[in-house]
Image (cartoon, rainbow, N blue to C red; front, side, top):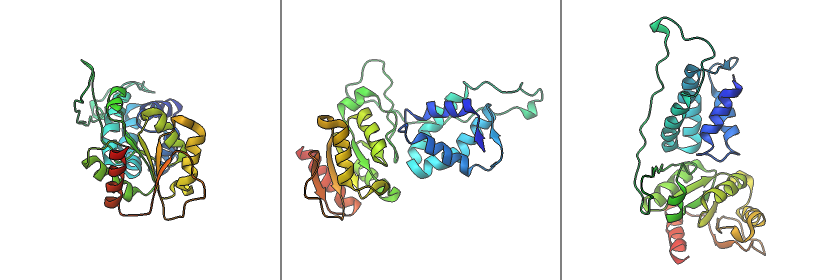
Length: 256
């Protein structure tokens, strides 16, 4: 299956506020790969959009980014469906007409310091940080967690969220740099070796790219540290359980 160019462009536009732009093409490619109709072209119409979004794309996002982000994106993507122009006239028979995309509800919560009349939508995710408005981020900058272990990622996010910490997720140095620019995290936590890169190398890459604007970095690893660390590395922790790691991170945040 391949995507109609306009459909692909709309999907990218809908996803990029929620997911690092560098990651969006990979998500779409994976969703296309798992679609049932391997030889077809996904056309520019609401029926094709709804089938693709609520089927293969939702499965990929759920697997890669978490259940909560799926719900948020289905709302956003259903709204984008209204911008699709049908590629053929609507059928005359009411039996053949396509039902409207289902709208999913997302919980909205007010946040301290909100501007009068602003819509403060906060979506808590088990994947990448979702759409959080800039003035909310200014009140409570997130921790940025860089890891590719999905089960451990979920365990960490759930515990940090329960402790009142907002968490953004990245899976490699590229998406981490994008998230740092977007949300200005107070702490970058590199757990393990995401995408085969050591936490020390990632910390150095972030420092080289951002200099003084780089956030403090906590490296969680079973490997011994190098003889010299990047200036932004504030702590090196041994591999530990998710529960123990959250306790250490909360201690570091409190002392920062």
